[in-house]
Image 1: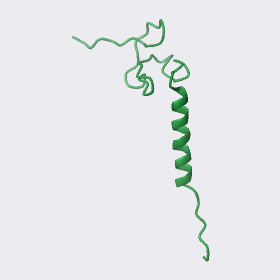
Image 2 (image 1 turned 60 degrees about the vertical axis):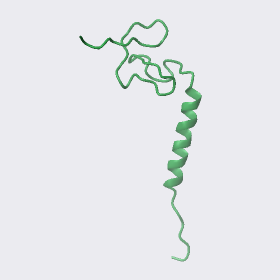
Image 3 (image 1 turned 90 degrees about the vertical axis):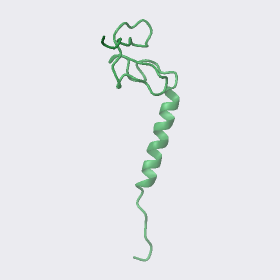
Image 4 (image 1 turned 135 degrees about the vertical axis):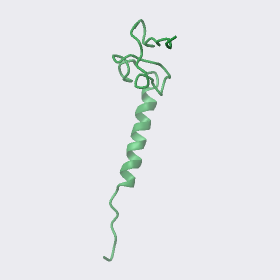
Amino acid sequence: MPPKKIKCSYGDCKVAAQRISGDCAFCQGHYCSGHRLLEDHKCRNLDDCKKEAFEQNAMQLNRERTQVIKGV
């Protein structure tokens, strides 16, 4: 017997959720292609997501910063 299809977690949406790419790591919901983005399903943890992305970008920029070597 094939596995049961998971329906989209967004409101009254009846479309089947996408496997893997439709899973939201911030609210644990399962979404179809039309609602898989955080903004599209109005993720309740959108602010946390933005904060985490900002912190990751800041750390990456600090790692890639050019260091000035004096006396060369």
